[in-house]
Image 1 (spheres, rainbow, N blue to C red):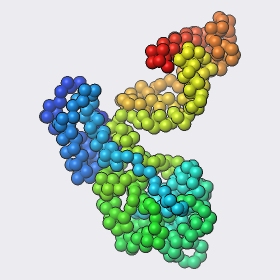
Image 2: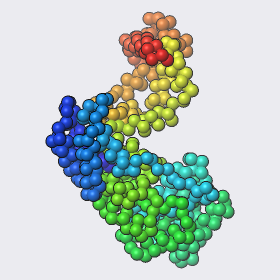
Image 3: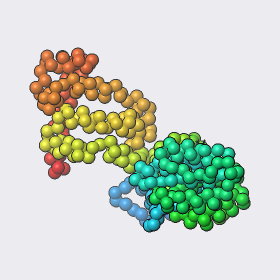
Length: 436
Ligand code: GDP
């Protein structure tokens, strides 16, 4: 999703690089190209118009910055406006003061509601909640069974009408579901509702009735980002018909142009809370407007990288290593630990791909030699603990033994040891300079 838009915007903005000053004509031309890129990505026309007007006004206005050159200034403005369209701040789920929090899902058939119910349940559980799912989609054959399957996968209970009583009343099921959640002390209830293939009165009425019966804290409108411009019309119809408090974008993993996803928030005024990007329960995340914007602009997703790093690194261990680095006492053992932690985050090429400017380096990154890292790992593992602590003690015969033991050449071992000494020296110099 967004690949074409991202490529286009990156290249438009790159054309500005190296210009000392931007004339009005430069800004107009850039704005025109951005406009075409957005329209081609299916972003709704009114949203494009507002966006372009704001970017132009700000770029031509008095926003003179000492710190940024004109091109950087435009990138900054475009980024900020994009974050604005996507909703600005990350909007968290509203939790009720008196549990259970009730979350109702609404949207067309096939939008991904039932799948989302499972994803939400799994996510809520991971946050320490005790969610329960309620099956009120009694329209679509198998919807109840499907919810039971995702519930089981997520490890959360599902409240469903007794089988064999014909088509039950979804409003009644919803009401009973909430009662059951209270009784069994679940703190969040997710109510799955029926959708139709198109917007239809009966579906809206049922959704309105369920909403009235369960008084949800959140009504999430679930929309398939692949349906293009229709997403905006559907969103408007649901907003007018049932009303909702937030949006969930699904199927962001598809290769559609995705601009509709960029329009829903601006058109309905309701924030995007979550994004789904795959069929598995874990393909799901909180929606962060700032991160999405920088991803679209090809600036990389530094925040995701930092978050992953935090998860992979043991904070105490990292801090201890930092202190050692500063004092010039870093050992190869520390180095190995840090490298293993980094590699836990995934292939190095993927990590680098998230860094700003890495977009154009995709090909080189694909060739990045993971085997080299394997070799380094093997060499360090071939050393004794004392040698890892102080590689100076490794003499020529030991170097040969280590090389043979780890299947590399002696020159590889020498190389690693020499580079380690250099790095250690550099780190302690740097630490001195920064007063660490
Ligand atoms: P519902 O009718 O709204 O309940 O929709 P479902 O949850 O049954 O989803 C419809 C189809 O879309 C199913 O085949 C899901 O596996 C699939 N689906 C749901 N979310 C995603 C997603 O984020 N990405 C992809 N690729 N498929 C999804």
